[in-house]
Length: 233
Image (cartoon, rainbow, N blue to C red; front, side, top):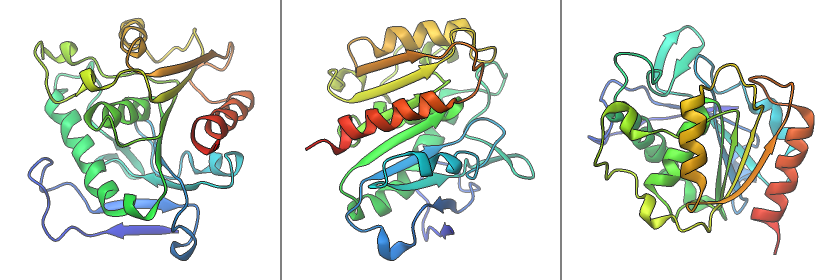
């Protein structure tokens, strides 16, 4: 089921031409109240339906919501912000995507007992960026075959939008990847490894041979992680 959220007034933090939020839900609205929420962020060139097949493999306690990225590449293909290697990549574009996601999330978070973020590839960049912007708002983060955004790659030497100093290592973060991932470049991996140290409670597992994808054993580990990090009394 897909909901469209129409904003009467769009915040100045993201462009006025960004579309209404498109969300795919795992449950009908009457069944969502009081449940822990997982928000899924798809990868570059994909859409909100891409990761929803994972919902059935996650703990059934959760409601899962998959948000579509705001920038259209082609019919059915979207991006959160330009690729970091692209000439038009800026930290402003990352901030706009984060504010776009938060504008919707702030409308629904009160209906749920907690919010966890899950992202694949560029979606992991989104999930970690939301955490870095709102360090106290999220129960846990799951990153699959992805990375965290390095502001210095866009020339942002003194960068205050991310509130990393407030992340003191208490938020659980699962990072699953293949060390031979052909898509996520070494500089992104190196930066992410440096960032996770001291900022999150890291669970990192590598999955040789999966390339830039998600495996069955990995999702089984994600389920265990969520049960321990979010659901455990």
